[in-house]
Length: 141
Image 1 (cartoon, helix red, strand yellow):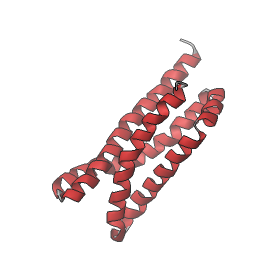
Image 2 (cartoon, helix red, strand yellow):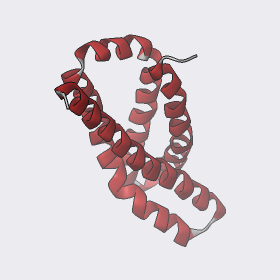
Image 3 (spheres, helix red, strand yellow):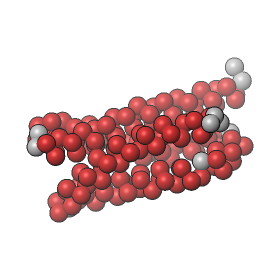
């Protein structure tokens, strides 16, 4: 195996792990919001149990994946950067909004309902946006 193939395996392994962690994170935040609206306190606490450790880890992977792409395949990073500039910016805005509400919402009980709303809606919107980016990143229309 050449170094390029090993680099591609490593990069796709990072993307795969990110997708698993993202599914746990986004799904648990959506279900937590949903159960909160329905008044199921015990189900909301179960969803919160899965949300708490994963949202911090997923942000670390959000940094590792582009760094690995730039480090392993610099010309591909330029191509992806031009094609995905607008969609990736929208994703980053939603992720930053989500992260800010999760970080500051837990610190203040006053914004608890806003935190649940923002994390629930972004937990619903972000996976769809990631799936919409996949055909763009692979070059098909």
